[in-house]
Image 1: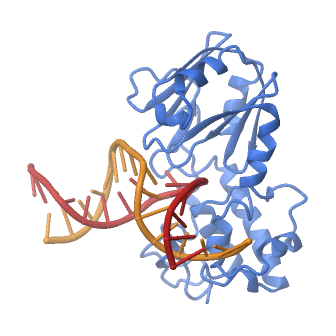
Image 2: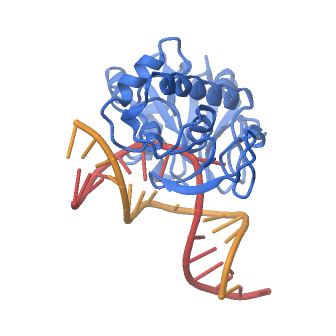
Length: 263
DNA sequence: ACCTCGTCCTGGTTGC
DNA sequence: TGCAACCAGGACGAGG
């Protein structure tokens, strides 16, 4: 999403900002936030974990979290009942924000608040060179929660959600219920590789479109065609042919191969 | 401090 | 066919 929407936003000034859903900026008044955003010029569109960071020349930043069904579009999306906000840019183009379930959030932060806000919520970026198996082990050390729950915690690592955790655990041959703090060196190295593999493949396929996710031009991602574990109820494991088990871990639907990913 | 669970929403699917 | 129950990519706050 960041890669796809950045060209439409970078260098552009927000001439018009309309926020149609007051939930979007809660607890702040959408009219006031819109007024503050007007006139800001985008320096760059950045990302940390699942937060899009629209950085302005002023040093302020708009943090956009898409949650389950949010998407930024490179058109005005006129007549779409789920359009929650509309930006009009200084080159005459529009960027619309659509979000069926209205879980997504827009938060405008002053320059000094941006990094502290992110740092309190989002851990290390797993695709950066600094991410190591050893560092992963340190983040998981002493944690007694199920491995899957620890990986879904965004402070452990940035960006893993329900799909990519199940995918990564399948690649790593690790059970989602494994106590997070008990992995040995070999298991940590497998998990480290697996997390990168799952995320890199998801990026290459431009995400997973289960129903709502769309790229800015309205097209779908294709990662859902290459799921190895997520959602594969009643299907055999690609490695060993064993039927997948569906369980609930950390309150989320979870799929794993009982043979390849033993407890 | 850590962990689990309910909640915030809308709409599609499933089961009776 | 009709309708209620259940389910969905996430994160946060309350409570244990």
